[in-house]
Length: 210
Image 1 (cartoon, rainbow, N blue to C red):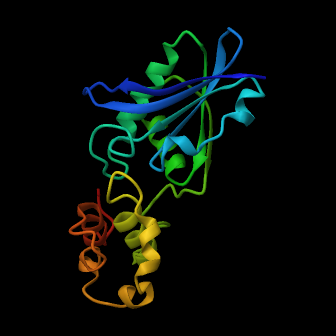
Image 2 (cartoon, rainbow, N blue to C red):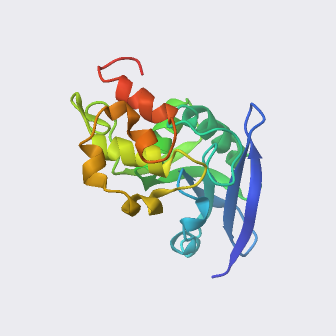
Image 3 (cartoon, rainbow, N blue to C red):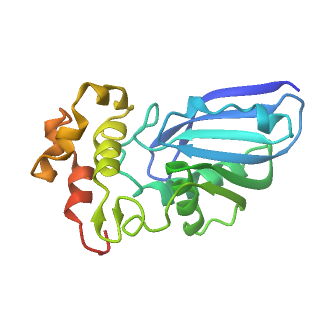
């Protein structure tokens, strides 16, 4: 089965920010159920083959502030609103038959959780994988104990810039850095400068609204 590809669609959110989105459709004319993937890790990594061969359209979107999308990325805070707006956009496309699901692991699973709590009525199914529902209990903290390696590497190498800088991590003596103090300054020690999200995550070390 052939695939129709629509690259780099600029999907506008309600605040005017435009998010880079790829659309993959079965080649023949029709309306289709749609799977949405919202990612912080580059929309161009997802292959449409498994979906298209099942007559399912695929929409893959860079989250706000990541890769080709406009705006500023801060983990989690925009995913509820942006997920809602994206689902509304899909539902109004002529190739969507009204059935929309979401798919993905880790941050791609978190975007699903936020889409659900947005109040959207567009979702028919979810497939979240490898993501905690409470990031203080089982992610960046484990019941109050800081998951330093995860928090530092993700926020200071993977998401501190528009694109991933994780490939530079092997240059550093990671074990030595993770044993150094103060923990709040590990962003600067690895050349990332002051990373607000990292410092916010480290500073909020008790269970609170953050």
